[in-house]
Image (cartoon, rainbow, N blue to C red; front, side, top):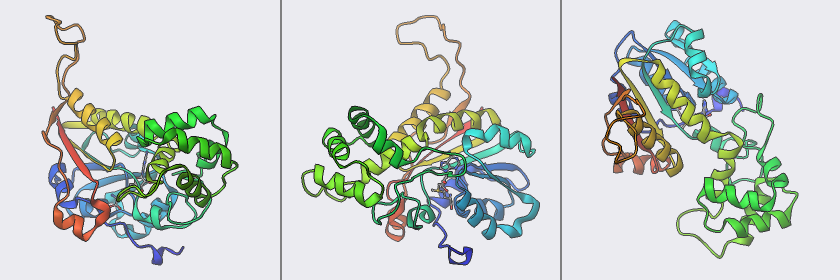
Length: 308
Ligand SMILES: C[S@@+](CC[C@H](N)C(=O)[O-])C[C@H]1O[C@@H](n2cnc3c(N)ncnc32)[C@H](O)[C@@H]1O
């Protein structure tokens, strides 16, 4: 696909994200999930200096094309946010005044053919964010994991109630090479339509999380962001499914508390000290107007905190 044909992802909760980042012209920020650069461009327009990371080389190429006019205010790095500290130190971006995580996939990845992220087209079962460094694809997982292990990961990472039936059907249908074959296996395993959700939604979510180690990397990325923040600096996270949002919520809650000892311990033994002040006591959701204009924003949940 030529860059001119790239339909840019519509940034979600843009005004809210910018407000919580509390952008200050000339200060350093990181966009840990560049995508096609919608949030990054708004940060640059507000006068921020931006270090932008994305694990996906195709997202990086699209964003480079879009943001080429920003010169030295912008440094784009093809890397996972699991390497945030390394990237920030290498490019003179430590400490930071704010870090934005806009998790999940961009419209570019969902709509582009050949990545295997969408159950709406028949294409190779890949799902790697970074095919240049990752070897294991979704096809490798569905074809090689024991049935019981597959059921476990569908339940744990997809919160899929028919995990055993689906794992059984996948095992019977092996080898599976394409998203279409996987969708057919899921449809054969589940009893009838399932409300608004496509029957394969949770299976695709689970495989994507496993292929890309998403939950472990998220935890590590959040820790690195806090380590990099200057006093008063902000961390802002937009999550799109409950597993991610739970990790964000628990992380922010934990890091905004002193002692983490179990109840009943009179004198603190853990020595934990709060590093953050929570800015969103209640999770922030997109407005009805935004959801109407951009249905993909529907599941977004924003949380933010400031470094003490
Ligand atoms: C929802 S999109 C971001 C969209 C972006 N805010 C915009 O306005 O265009 C999420 C992006 O995060 C990237 N991503 C997911 N996990 C990542 C990770 N561990 N490290 C870096 N980028 C990651 C994806 O490749 C995708 O491009």
